[in-house]
Length: 268
Ligand SMILES: Nc1ncnc2c1ncn2[C@@H]1O[C@H](COP(=O)(O)OP(=O)(O)OP(=O)(O)O)[C@@H](O)[C@H]1O
Ligand SMILES: [Mg+2]
Image (cartoon, rainbow, N blue to C red; front, side, top):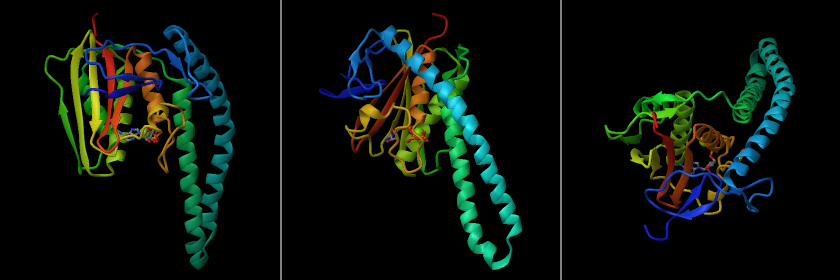
């Protein structure tokens, strides 16, 4: 374990320490990622909220402007499909299908961007971790060939979180683990109680994350996947922090990746 490092949700590296209290981070990565300035944690969170509010406004108007032409393209392909017949339909139909699939993809990107930038109201209530994880597993659609080992001790207390948001967080982490495993491997979910926080880890034994990518994976729209949007982890960070928790990642290339979410215990 000596010498191992974790990357916090804002990309800062620190040595692995057990029994650490979840903490706010002191580095902001702005447009010039990697040129972090050291700031007080509250200042850092305030800056991120301001950036998100500005992004939310821009995203809202862009989404509105883009959805109308996308709808028109979808209608046009629908009518062309009906108008064409016979041999022509076979050949042209395939291209119409491509246009349609790409319109659906663009629509998904807009929806994810709006979700991230605008956020949703956060209503923390006492919630049972096992129920959140069950729902998240249902949403993540992991293939049957991926084995899930979940070990949540009985004594783990209720957490004070917005259960819909945390379900989305764990669904995103599980989906990433499943995609990293490409259909073969093990996902382990564990939980422990540390200093008034429940620490939940989602680990996979896939290829892991290379040191060049690791500091950037929480950046909006950063993705190494052909069809990835790059908003899964930014949404995780935004939701976890809105719920008073923190998220960090640890990875050894070739051995897998572990994401750990710390959540406040209910009733403290
Ligand atoms: N468990 C993991 N193993 C390896 N790499 C991972 C893992 N989780 C995340 N990553 C890396 O982090 C990047 C960002 O993840 P994120 O979930 O934000 O976006 P995405 O999965 O690419 O797209 P989407 O928005 O559809 O989720 C991924 O593209 C991948 O490179
Ligand atoms: Mg993802």
